[in-house]
Image (cartoon, rainbow, N blue to C red; front, side, top):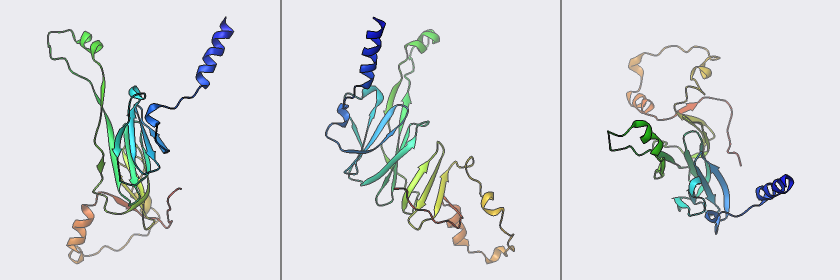
Length: 208
């Protein structure tokens, strides 16, 4: 009897069935967060579905944007997409726990009765990145990207993966310039940049 049950369980694990959310799509790339699946189609469109609702429907995240890559951070339930024109888009899965309106109820009972719900934010374009991107990767706090002219840039909270001192440790110290000789406009532009160029002699290309 135990052998029969084991065989039935093994058979059920080996059976594959197309999820309804994939029906009618030619999927070329998939990225999964902790609670959400994101798919890229051959037409450059992106759709997502919650793992709690894989048999129902998919929601359009990006349409007619000619997306060529999707990735993200499983820790933050964040998905990020790159378009052929070099634009970056992102959206997040937000956890929501309803709070009880009755202050007289026992807090322990409230916690047991609470049901976690999810809400997916609308996709937004990262307008602060004013250079064309050809490839990128992200951590839970930072972004690293390759520009069209094969340079490496980084932005976000990148202290754990990069320090500007790494670039300067082997360089000879330069003579200090008179502050009066600096171009004020150039200084203002540099200080407002949302990203940092990583100085290196290497040229980077996109991974195909």
